Image (cartoon, rainbow, N blue to C red; front, side, top):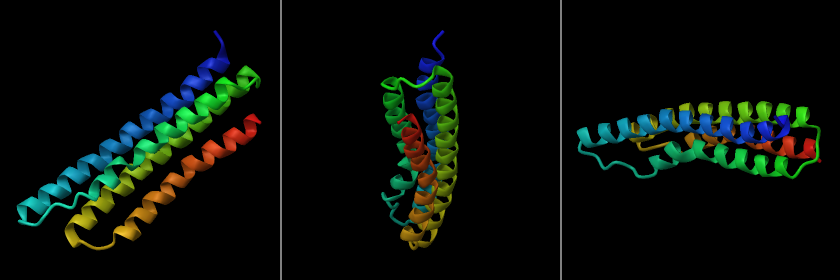
Length: 141
């Protein structure tokens, strides 16, 4: 088995698993926040979908890294290591982002205020995945 190809698949696969988990956290909270709005006869803010969908980007980063890794001539063991480490970093970023998005959805639906502050925290979680992507691409040369 080619460990390098396994690493390329794991980069995207692990990142996508994190995205799915993060989206489930944020999505459930968003639906709950909309329910609270409807129960209070308030309009449900569509902007909450931003929080719910934010963790999806880590799958894209995993895909971009996978493509870079496929065209790399680096040592297969190194590719495996990069794939696992970067995939896990992206996955954990997506999970944290989902949890932050869940809190942001709840808070925004209840108060109608603070979107820019909440999305800033969601963006900070995103930064970890971006760093993992960029630093991995630099390491690949």
